[in-house]
Image 1 (cartoon, rainbow, N blue to C red):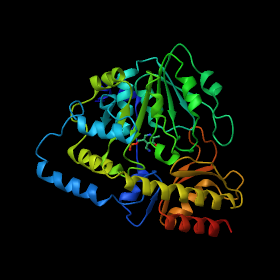
Image 2 (cartoon, helix red, strand yellow):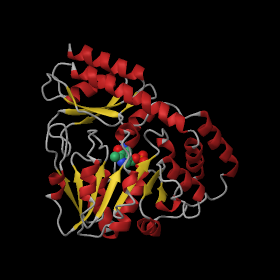
Image 3 (cartoon, protein in one colour):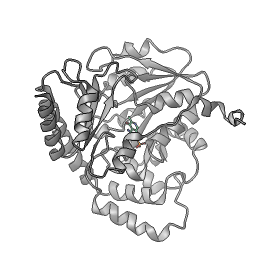
Image 4 (tube, protein in one colour):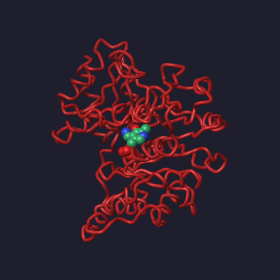
Length: 366
Ligand code: PMP
């Protein structure tokens, strides 16, 4: 007997998000992880000590975000909004924050504008919430967007506009002025700042003037704590209140909280890693630019996407060659917004990783 009659509309519209690339890496420790935009620097000693100190308390529930002023205050200090703890809420990774945004703001039939190529959970969630993801198309080959690319897609059903700033997977960044224009629409504007440290162009200062704007943030990228799963949302307290109304209590565990507090007390660790990654991004970009047939896309993030359109090898072939030599990079062959077998993305690892990847690519293209 089929069990399908029990399946909700949301589950029917959903699909398993199969993370084969992450599985590959956990099962092949010799592989250098250049495919999920994690950083390749290990956590600092303060974070390790803070997690160890919590091992005594694993039998207790964690402090919940509703009463946890300490963590929210430190987040507020980190993004330059001191004293504004009530503008923050937290999630089990920013993926959970995204899920909470859909629960708090999206009804069936709503439209959500998302720039293509996209970070896929937004379109997936749109489908699952029986809403419609509307593609915003780039205006050139470097994945730039102008206000009209967005505004021409706004209708009276538009409930949310998502701006990943910088965007994953291409690394472009839209201007503050563009976000400013989008905020004039009668809808929620989500600015996903997962990679903001690498762009060094945060726009938290715009929140106060734009009560419909929400910024999301993660500890998985520059903060180097992808494994502990912690993300947060920043918005005016009324919007944060709606998110908290659908948020599960104690959704962030004791270890993640302790690690976050220790890290926020050691911002130089984040700054040092970020500076190294920005320098190595330029190093990789400059080297790829000289390779025959390859075009690196200008990036404001901790990765560089490469267009293989004019190359004698496909993106699949180069990606495979690198993987055979223990460098896992991310292939975007024939994916949404990225037609053909043209694109793959390299996360910026250590300097040694970048030297090795460049040498391998030169060797393969020779
Ligand atoms: N937003 C963007 C744009 C991302 O690329 C990612 C991760 N790849 C996330 C959010 C999710 O980050 P996390 O759930 O690890 O906090």
